[in-house]
Length: 109
Image (cartoon, rainbow, N blue to C red; front, top):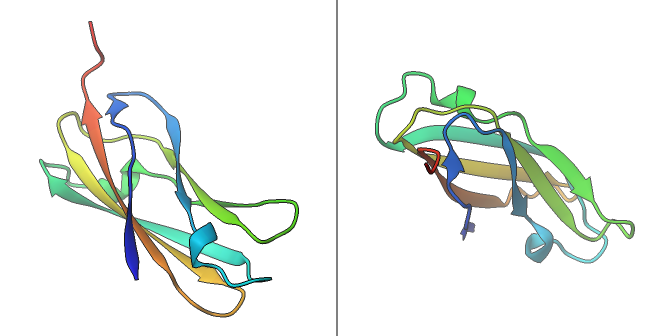
């Protein structure tokens, strides 16, 4: 199952963190072992869209029942909208997916 994650737009040149929460995908006692983020151009032009985001970091809460993939936005081309597909691998071997759209916008004057 793929679910959409809402991400706010990022100002051009800004480096920020965005999150994909997999808590609702986990069974009791299950955790997220790893995650990948694949970034493609949804609208606009960027010859190297994978450079717009860094590798995800997994954040587990103290009980180990919730997991969030933290993705750093490290670049992007002004005016481009990216589709970022975050796929987790759970301790049970399942691979849930979250999809987000990331817009790179001009910094407000």
